[in-house]
Length: 130
View (cartoon, rainbow, N blue to C red):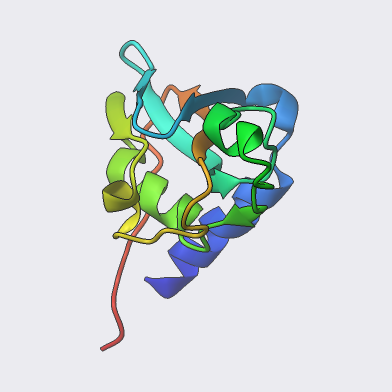
């Protein structure tokens, strides 16, 4: 149901961030989320570059190229699609993981995910338009 997705989007915005774990990996690395028998509940995600200090691009810096600030609009959706309700999940930090979306071509990106490990599975329903 559409309201289920809306509920989880709203919940992701208001949940206490202190309860979340936050991990990040640089472009072309792989993130592993392992809840060790519990279930992954995704709170938020960034595929892009909102903080150039996280994964600096030394070659661009040497050439005087300023990194763009960007975020793929589908960041949370893509991560939830791959990981929500799983006990563990591997996410390659590549455009292909995000439906081939490159939010800032030529800028080094990172994947940042906030999540918590829950005792019970929290499902999301992903439905297209009927």
